[in-house]
Each structure stands twice: as C-alpha cells, then as structure tokens.
Image 1 (tube, rainbow, N blue to C red):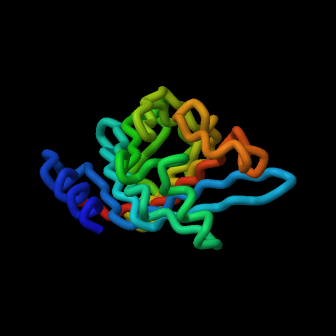
Image 2: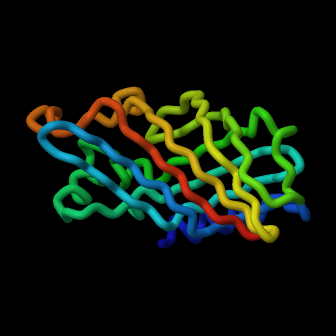
Length: 181
C-alpha cells in the first residue's frame, strides 16, 4: 500500500490540465495457459493517467497487488525466482495513442486505437504496441486492451521444475475506467 501511495503522489505532482483523465483503481490481469495449469493474476490498484490532448498514457502497477486463486501462486509470483517484488516493486508503461485523430473525447462512441510505448517489468524496458478500444459514454472514458508479452524477455524465469507450468507468452488484459481531472 505504501508503494501505491507513492505512485499516486507522483501522478498528482504531474502538471495536469482539463484534458487529463485518471484512475487509481484500474484493472490489469495476467494469464498463462499450459496443458498443466492455468495461472491468472488480477490487480485492481492500477494507477493510470491519460491525456486526451496529446494521447499520452502512463500506467504504474504495484506488483504485490496482483492476487491469484491459490496463495502458493501469489507467493511464487512475488519471490526471487519470478517477479522479485522486494527488488522491483512496480511495473509501468509509458506510451501514446498512435491514431489519436480517430478519437473524439467529446462524442460518445467506441474508438479502435493502437497504443505504442515502453513497458518496464523488473529491470527491463522494451517497446510494445497493442490494439485496444477507448469507449466514451456520458463524458466517462474506459480503455480496454489485450496483448501478449514473452515473460523471458522481462527476466521472469522461475524455477526449472515449474517451467512447464508457465507459458512463454503471458497475456495481459487492461481495463480502466477514468475520471476527468
């Protein structure tokens, strides 16, 4: 919770204006499927800022806020063989809507977009691009996207005896409802 408070403070310190939208309780889920086991983690404490004038997106995620169906999965996820949350307590994304001209924040509708930027997990930052939707209804903004990353690209390896239980490709789903700043 302390990490989340720090993240919120950092976002509050940004120079924000009327075109900014913020959420402090966005949702990001991660999913791995293998024939041996499905692993799904869910985080409802995602902090995100969206600037409707520039199309910039920023996300900050406290890794310890991911929760799993089994306590053992959560313990393994946070330990030194996987996410190393004591050393790397957060992940983040900073990017921009590539096709910003397609989105009208003053008109209700569902807009297909592509967001490109840098995803940082542990000690690795890599460029990613993902398709998604921005839904606008009654001045409320919602964002949805599902994309895949390779866990080994971000040094998420795990112990050798459980490698067959984790997919090399991790599906990430983002669902955020924003309030206007």
